[in-house]
Length: 389
Length: 135
Image (tube, rainbow over all chains, first blue to last red; front, side, top):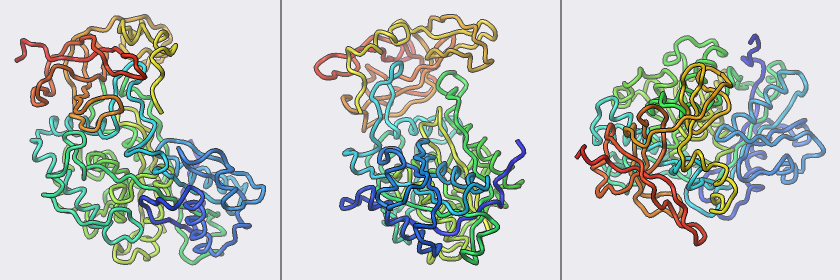
């Protein structure tokens, strides 16, 4: 593989709706609201967009899902469905089209109207597969927490306290974000005493269930400064699809996610990063559950294997810490409107890099990493995007 | 979305896998996989033979799910079980009077049980129970 996306394309406009239980908004509202903000931010007209990619699992049905609400006129539009990485993959495909020299100005938009699916949690979970009685997503990730505690000798109380600190940190950040769904401040005690969802995970170990939309306008690195003085350049866009060996063999250990580890390695290579913990200024990772964030810190090489507890207790990932994680509040506070999440993460990194993150502003960030993980830990699909100045 | 209806052809097609517990073993490298695959996930060989899974094994990990999928009564105790002789089975526990009885490393055995009632029909499958001499 000789090609790299590094510094070939730039994001020149972004938009993001408020996330939440948006009963009065449908998919079209989310799309229009996010894209209007992105267009104004880039100071371009909808008619300047030459092609578009739309990420959505439940709320989109082909390119017309966005051409109609946006009144896009006869341009090519692709609907991207790639599990929880659908938003990142929409950005990836849009970026590649610009890097290939086909278009100068393209749109990536992600959206999901989860609340129209009529249930708590994610719809579409079969209660039985053909060969395995499976569980819910909280159940699958809870099995990961059980094994992580067991492997590294943490008592359930110690393990749950470690995880509680992750949620407390994310809510502290989310409380300062007017676009977050959940803006309440938590305490460790409250997290530990919350109702159980799938032991050892309680209510506050689980992310919210929210509607939302987010959009990015992408152009070539050469043209980026024609749009704004502070474009954000794409450094890496990687996707890693599991061969699903984790559920076909007894090798998978339930204490790491091989796909996150490999997507991280590929992205660091593409971006020319040799020491991720030192070089990455901030990260938005897929914290569908607290345990997912804990394990992801190790998979992305921010913490040594089995040692994330030390970094959590040292405050490493807090907003004023060495490597702030979930500066906007994460999935924990934004929920996971699937197609929107990846672009929502990039929106926060974009604002932070431009010094526009208000009370959440991190001092002089240079590189931000966004990570999405789809499906269950045994057989996921992971995306890692790195952006910077 | 709901699961296939109890009379769906998938239950006939997957009978060998679901009820007779047939996985595959690679003739080339010996790798055992369940469910069955067409290509060996270890070495890529297409030379695979049927493999009869054991009904006993060891709990690799578990949880206690208080918000289970539709048609299950909470709590259920999902388990990942490493079967004796190879293969991993994701199932659920039965006959555990308290969740505290279930532990990583505990020995379990499969028993045929009703899983759920769907559209008026019972759906059967395997659950695990603790092997008694472990108590």
